[in-house]
Length: 102
Picture (cartoon, rainbow, N blue to C red):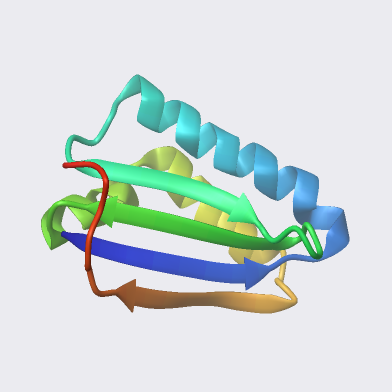
């Protein structure tokens, strides 16, 4: 199993747009699921403008399929154009255990 965490902080005025862009990605994934992948996004309670994306997949090939989703490409382009306060930082996670199977 492969997992990646991406964290970044957007400007306060971009929070609503970022959430809308993320929702478009989630809607696309619901309409056309990527088998063997779980994808979720959160904000830190402390500030509401720091986003954390978690992508868990059965293998690296499945993990990379998110990059092929048009809405994800649009999300990434919008995020980059918004000039985040803290740019995206990707962290690869080592799998230990899960309460689900992919």
